Length: 107
Image 1 (cartoon, rainbow, N blue to C red):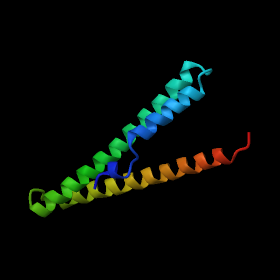
Image 2: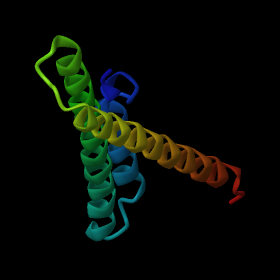
Image 3: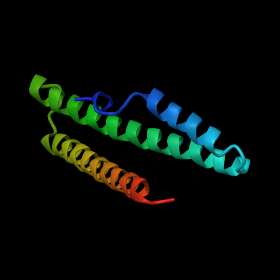
Image 4: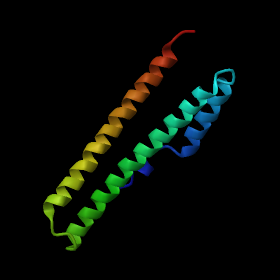
């Protein structure tokens, strides 16, 4: 299973980046760099989660096919993939909560 199936298209993040840039036109360039770096960090970490998922899937497939004989390696890869996905889901939940709190704020 690839995590990219569950991650919104990067066009959404790029649109958010453009919106933030347009909204903060009067802000300094460092805030634009922050938005871009947040996107890059988020994308990088989600790619890492995806890589662990693919690695675990390949290990499991190798065990079933007989090419992988080390069961402990397969279990470690699977557990790492599980934990990284759970962490990504928790981070997403926190980001959604923060976004909802920001929307509730009155100006």
